[in-house]
Length: 140
Image 1: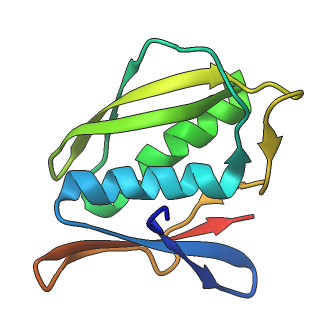
Image 2 (image 1 turned 90 degrees about the horizontal axis):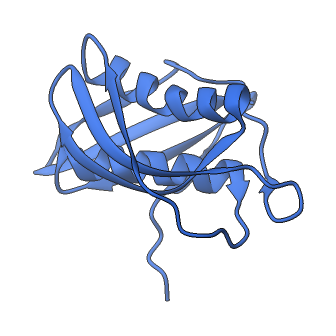
């Protein structure tokens, strides 16, 4: 049985999700993977080389939004989807990750949810009870 990486949060106009992790890196990685899972169902792709993704923000909230928005930009502007991700480091203002990107293939891949933007609405990222938690809402 595959462990559930996130759970959806019902909202009238948007869709949201909540993720947990033991570290900042884990919660950022879980948020990205949840984001991908909500947006796409991916078919089989050939192996690709990872690319380094570096994103900055003024604090953890902006960093999380900018990180997820980077993947939305790669999809909307360049037609790339992320197949696999490993977060290497997270500071208060910068994240560095390895991302395995593929071109979206209309024959193999399916867009499940058209996301317009990652919002700041009820956005949360922080540590609670010695665990990291993030809550994100997406404008659809």
